[in-house]
Length: 526
Image (cartoon, rainbow, N blue to C red; front, side):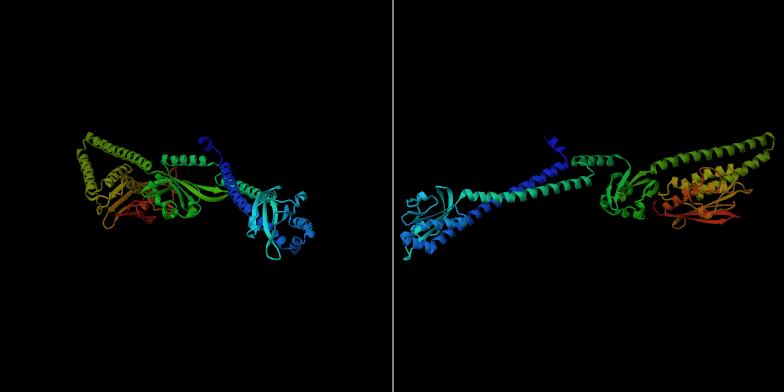
């Protein structure tokens, strides 16, 4: 039974409820109206009957007829005339002994009626009474007739049959019933309009379907790993799931708050525009955002944004890149030392032992100097690892890679992770190596210091400088030929911006370029 009731349409439920309520109100009000109308009709007819009875009892012609027996027959004509005027069912006139002088039934005239009228005949009262008359149950008005000496000489009874009273009441009930039917029809029409409007607002879905969709929506939102936020046309957050709360670093108090509290630098008009795979940083995490605009009748009424956390994937890719880069650097270093071993072997086979010793001592002197600068002046292991790889790569490419002897670098803060350092230093030094690759004298100088509030890295080369300085940080722009170019310096700028740092460039097309990176020690990665 409950299952069948559950599937009843919302329209049927609302119409049934409205019609039931309207019928209940109509029946209640009609019952009250009929009760009061019956009482009022009886009271009005009773008053009319009593008033007519009084009027007849005070008529001089009636009193004269009682005093002159020759005029008794006039009472019947007087009663008939007044009865027609007031639409009474009957008027009975009797003397004090109960002898009838006027009666609708002419055969009853002159007869004595035993009906008890002591209240009028003895006490002289004017009153109404409900009696069982020969014509049926009637409501009567009774009035005594006083003679010239003040004695009661007769009584006048004016009667209205209840049958006719009920006919009048039924007539009024029909009138109120017609009004009730009109009210009921108006209620039904209003109910249909209301249900149609509700179904339009609910997209034609029934309440149990909406409940099922809500439960499914909640389950889906909590089961997927992507963060989802929905806003309305005013930019207020109407829905946010748990992954979004975690990625945005907010809580449920942002529900029905402005989206600008979650994205302080995001304009509402931008958030209400669709986008695909837009990369943004949220609380030290790189996420990919997709936005879809919600429209109704061509009007934008909100937007839904989904977030995918790319940080872990990016770290894995960067780790793979690091391993590959280390592998290439070790290969270059192995290749370089293999070449030197071949040279030493040749010198020894030729008996040129002095030259072989001089070569070994020169290599040892250079290695000792580099190791002194690298391990004594540069204390951060991550930077040491990066520089070792670049030294081997520079050696393979016959580039003079110099670590400035004035460099001084302590272990870096924990928020400066290895992947970020590789993104900054690796790309800048690779660009420097490419810039000097066509020179006869190839020279790249590295300098690092952490004196003060910033960590400073500087890479200088003696290349041909930067051709288009204002566009070098644009993603996809490159002065070099080939595919997959133009991303290195864009990555550098994005990474530096996350640390709240900056990049300075000194560009001289005859002497080369100098890239200086400033990273705040206390800055949190954004």
